[in-house]
Image (cartoon, rainbow, N blue to C red):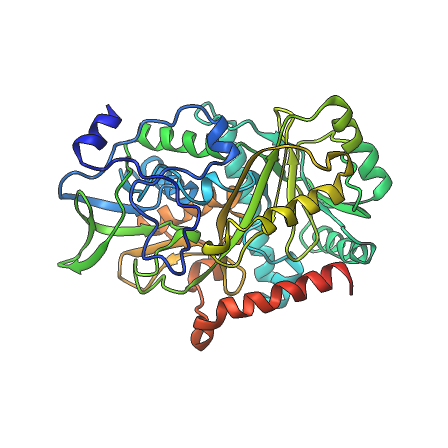
Length: 466
């Protein structure tokens, strides 16, 4: 039925574009296929959606983007506020970050540590932020434990693994801060305990363990959100990119190839795939960063023993350009890290070789192992390293939630809940991520990638040598 609807509407499925770049391309495309990720390859059939918009329609709320955030917003609008929203997706469902990430749920929002929250906002606001992410993880846990969600969870906490000895004092200080200021029971362990009980990462000099951390199957989570959102009454329209936007008479007119959607309120959930021309209030508010990811073939028993995998929990090393990695339920291993600066350079094999080098350094037993999957995706890094869930400007009826900086798997569920509250006119906590906009980069905007080219070698020098 869905394929017939697409054919009738004249929207054939377009192929995946590996060179797509959100800073230079006008938009994410129209009805493009997913990136060839492990998640898409192993999730099973995609859920039914509502096909493309095929006529002009009027709705109360339109959500742009069908990833975790957009779908969570639709779920919570319906479940908590009785509002059946319409979700507009340019391509296949959950086409962007939500099916290209590492599947790691951590007790984080954005890229800053708790000590950095205190420096930026003071202790009391930092404590309130911590309470927010604790509540967020509880919401996420409740969601994935429900009968509606099937995402192969692997709980067990999150490990920050010290890739050099010099990092251990910093981890110890952060763990003390978490315990003494936030009442959160992080634990520091040495290399011997880490190797004996959890994983034999050969770079590791020890680790800080956080009790909250769960690995999930990224596409199965997204597909479950689609099914739940539609069950609650939301419509999920794929192949419906917003190519024009005007506001008249209290309605936002969102032009798609199949018809115009008139909405009282609009919630933007496009993250690292936000088109530059979508709306002036989101233009240049994020710095999309490419991340590479690979999944190996199934490990042999000897390889697994040599790597010491006794946990499927999320693992993250302490590099600025960090590696994120994990042991998968089917016996493969996944690892990801930095990639190209631009989309045009994404296919350059040197980026894959750099990631493989990182894999071999951690797990020499896997040197030369065959890779079953390799892909890349754009991470939505904000200019101050923290997300925003807010109304773009007062009284506009335009809201957005984005800027997770690679930590959106868990927090996107709460972000969608918070954005639903804002859309429904309900109060949210008085926190900087809710009551301020995403910052721009001002006159430096045209030079951001030049800065990125300069910073990457510096980060590597600082992480590996200095």
